[in-house]
Image 1: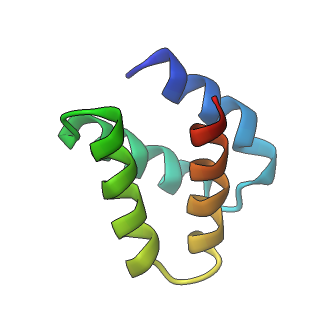
Image 2: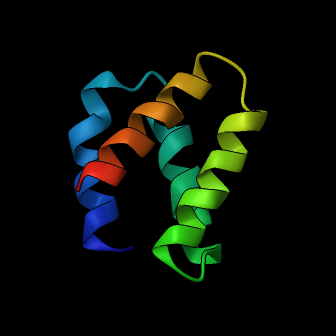
Length: 68
């Protein structure tokens, strides 16, 4: 897992309702992705499929990931 991914997970943890589920999903997507841009595309696809409140967790993660 990349250090950027670890840093984002650490920083968003206090704001995430389903942290373990989020961590598992983003680690899986990171392994599948060929580039960082591809990872963001895969994450956006998951956001479109997700139900609240997990959708909000994914958005929080993505927002922080794009800033770093």
